[in-house]
Length: 401
Image (cartoon, rainbow, N blue to C red; front, top):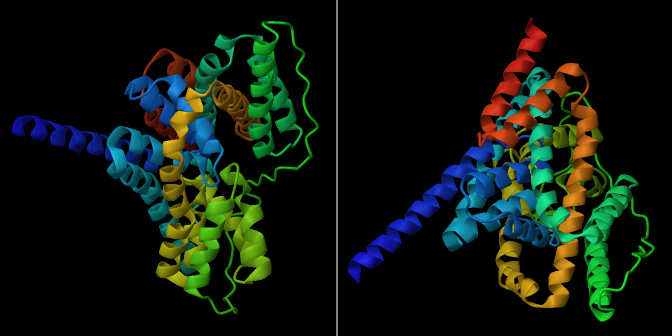
């Protein structure tokens, strides 16, 4: 009995070490935003390590998409919990967030001290093309699991969701609407015993999703803050944003500006855009923008409180939603809705891929990098970090030679 307990303890420790090692590495190498992070997690956990299968992975992704907060960070937290229990939940989140926080904190220090940041355009010329290939490989794999193997209805729904997303309909509306519509279709199909059914989309209220990429150069002279900063207000403001922000991390600017620029007056528009830019081009969660803003307005204590405030709701929400997730699969009605949300989530990833590809694939060389990386990813179980490193080197050589 004692030997069995020792073996179980060793197994738990080994799993926790696996979780820590994987998400620490992803925290340093996961460039490209939430879609790329999710693609990298799928490659590592589904394809290389086989902790879960594709169907389970897309179920987790759908559940995560239905709660507020940074979805790729929440997925990391959830995967850590499934692999190593409650310690894994905490360790996965900290290891994924920690490296990005340290990198952003360093850049914030340089920004304040020197009034400028190192230019990284050469590196990201090649990295962004590799990231497109990583997302494309993940979209293809998830598409086969959630859409292509399940008949014509999921394909039609995916195309409709993709079209509406590209027209600017809010992602949350598409996720919930896609799930409810697919659940209704499946219910009517069962009621009519296989009768043909035409899918009619309900009228959605148009709600333009705001997406911002870097709109300002990374060289900005700081103006001294003239408004007193309260650390408690800073923490509570980021806590509120972390608990209420739905959708991709790219929409964070629309949440930050009303509070920090218009309401509190702690930042200028230019500083806010630079902060969001830093969160987007560094590895790890885009929400580490909070680290940068916290440091700008209140130094190291502000950076720490801003980071804790914006990410703390993710740990709590994942812990709350986990007991409810299995129920969704056991009931036919909710299982059908979850299938619809799965389809919508994959279609939205396809939409993000299209949008990011427009800015990343700008010439023949970037197209070549992306295509070669995609072929390698589809053919070999290679660590995507090596491809990102190769893309960075190619980008450097492109501008140096």
